[in-house]
Structure formats: structure tokens, C-alpha cells
Image (cartoon, rainbow, N blue to C red; front, side, top):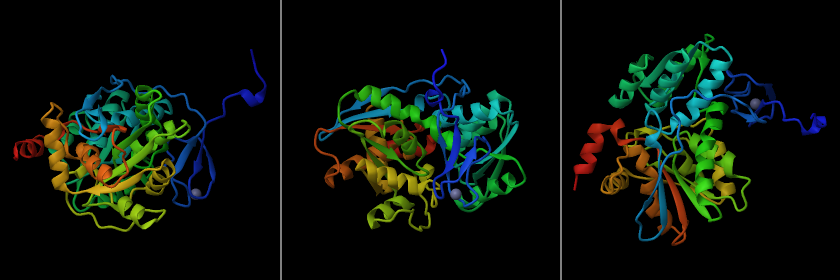
Length: 355
Ligand SMILES: [Zn+2]
């Protein structure tokens, strides 16, 4: 039975977050002419690339102050949450006949993208920092990615990938792609399902902020919506600095080094959106140092959960958020363990053994 036109699903399109310019759906579009990021409008029926995407396990963490549940994203096919976004992004690219893409990654996103591109038969040129974790590069190489190691900062790596994209190769950027963010909505859906009617907060490690943004797209219409908290590394905290200063856009920072290497993003393309989502939800952005991350890695290892340092950032931020009054005693809190500790075996071993 055909209903009136107004009840038909809207055709999916893209809209610029900065200037509101609209674009027809185009899997290659990741930004506007003005430089702003673009968002998906309407619904898009895409078949994800199937590597065995599952709803990830939730495990309760004994905690003296809070009702903490950690969500083990390491159980996803390539060992990190990035599979949620890439299954959707690469599914869309494949449906549109794209046969070659370029991307940049500090590790997990690239490993995940390589696996999905392998399944879809898409050539991937992957640019990564010289310092990227060995375990992650091994994955990408095994899946057939053409690796380009770039000296310098994470931003230098992104610039090298974008230079190839300028020649016409589709830029499959997890940090900016509206389709990657759409894929990460499933995390928010799984958490909301588990929470039921309980009030809750979500505390998420944030570099580019895609997992937080996908979660917010999924849960922002809930009443009441959960509060979202972003945790960065003090080695590179443009969003924490902007939040503290009341600024709408990421602060200018220079990244130093950290054991939490997966979140050292000095200029997150969707940083303004992350700050907006966190503020609307009633949450906050904080940063924690490497000592706090190491404590969190050991705490998790001690109860059978092996997290790479970046993945332990959320747990590392819990104590500070509670101490600062952001999380009331007894509140239900969900915290993704974004990547498996086997991603960084030597680092994980050193941290877990240090007393
Ligand atoms: Zn624009």
C-alpha cells in the first residue's frame, strides 16, 4: 500500500555542519567546499561488509563509587571499535563500485579498514606514522594494504594521505567520514538496550571523537538522554582545553608522546561537534596522564581484561570525573574498552607487570 508522499522515507543526502550547504549522497564526499565536515541526513540502507560484527560483551567492573560496565570492543573482528564504522563505510563504497581508497591511521582504524577492504576487493593505500604500533601494522599488511610510513606528526600522516586523495582516489577517512560515524551508532544502540530505563553516563576515550559522535546520534533523542564524557590524553588534549575554556572549537595544541597513542589527534576534524554533543548532554571533556592510564591498564588486567593503553583511557578518567563531581555516587556508567591489549603486546606487558 502506497502512503502519501510525506510518509515516504527521506532520500539520504549530506549537509555541511558549518555552512548548511546540501549535497547529494556521494560516498567520496567527506567535507564541504568551505572545509566543514558533512553529516548524513535521512536514512541509508547499506549492507555492511560482514566480517562477523557482533554486539560486544558488557562486563561489570567492581568499583567503590560507581556502577561501572565496560564494553569489550576488542571482541569485534579486528580487535577494535573501528570495525563498527568501517563495516558500514566500506559496505557503502563497495555498493557504489569504488575499487581503490586511501586512508591515514595511527593503527586500529587502518587495520580494520584493511580487513574490510580485503573482503570487498578494494585496494587500500594506507598512510601511517612511523611510530605506529607493530601489531596494528602487521594486521594491515596481512590484509594486503599498501603501507606508506610517514615521519613526523599524526597531522603529517593525514596530509600525505590527503595529497593522494587530491589525485582522485577516494579518501576513506574514519576521522571525518559521515558514513563511518553512522556505523558507530550501533555502540550507542547496544548500550541503550542494556541500560533500559536506568539513568546512565558514557565515558569514552576520544581522539577524533567518532565513537562519541555516533553514540550521540543514536541516543540524543532519548528522554532523558545519557550524559557523555570524553577522556583525552594530557599529551594531546585540544578538546579538554577547549571545554575548560568554554570554546566552541578545539584549542591549538602541539601533540607530545603518550602510551595512549591512538588518541593523539591535535586537530580533530569533528572536534567542534564533539564539544557540542558533550555540552548538550550535560557531560564534560577531561584529560588524564600516562600514570593514570597505566593504573587503569593494570586494574583491568587484574580482572582478566587486556586493554591497549588508549582503550583504558575511559576507565582512567572515572576517578577524576567522580572526584570533580561529574558522576554521582552509584551512577550507572558505561565505558568502552576500545581496543584489545594484544594490539600493543610489549607495552601492555610492561604496564601490567610494573608494580
Ligand atoms: Zn560548508
